[in-house]
Image (cartoon, rainbow, N blue to C red; front, side, top):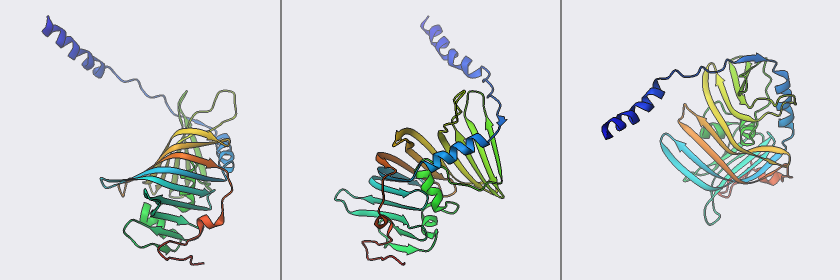
Amino acid sequence: MKTAGFIVLLAIPLLFACAPRKPELPLIAVPADPLLQALARHRQSFAGLKAIASVEIAKRGRKRKLDTVAVVIDHTRRFRIEAYGPLGQSLMALVWDGRDTLLRLPGEEGGILPGPTGLERFFGEGMEAAELCALLAGNIPETDASAATLLCRQNGDCILELRNGSLLRRVRVSPPAEGSDWEPRILAYESHRADKLMFQARFDEAVEIAHYRLPMRIVIENPDRKLQLTVLYSEAEVNTPLSDDIFSLTDETGTVNSK
């Protein structure tokens, strides 16, 4: 009897495994303009962010955890990301003043790099500074897409595709509430160039701060470089005044602003 019962227990999962899967609901094309307008309103409602986060950097199988990281974003114009040690010492910094970048990594001397060079050294090609600003705020960058396509599943997520030449941006958003204006919740973002995935981002655990929905967990990946950056906000202020000094390209190692 015990043997027979054991066989039955083994057989039940196999029966479920063999059962045909329910087909996914088809994607249906719907007008994209209402969503584009809602995303524009959402983007315009964000002016800036001051936050404390923990950051995990995984690259080619190696991981590093930074427990105290200051993240300051001025819309899509400037940003500062700086990690601190237990005694308050600066461990690394990545700063963009709207033109050039300051990059200082552990064990390396800091320096000012022209244009997006510093960002490319950290994230690889394909990531624009203004785009990183948007992603760290749970947003998508403003785009001049020549073609926009919106595909939705019944009672499911929607996929917005924005294409401009060889550049394709794909955004996964929550479905609209029935009978109401679209209040989009951005779930994921992808950037493709010439059909190659350059990087992707996921947004989770969104909370409303100062009438702005901010994801408290953001994961950005560059599959080509096997790089994954996980940002977990613990404290955040949205749309508060920001000092210009925060974005000055002055480094404690002696590097000075090139302007």
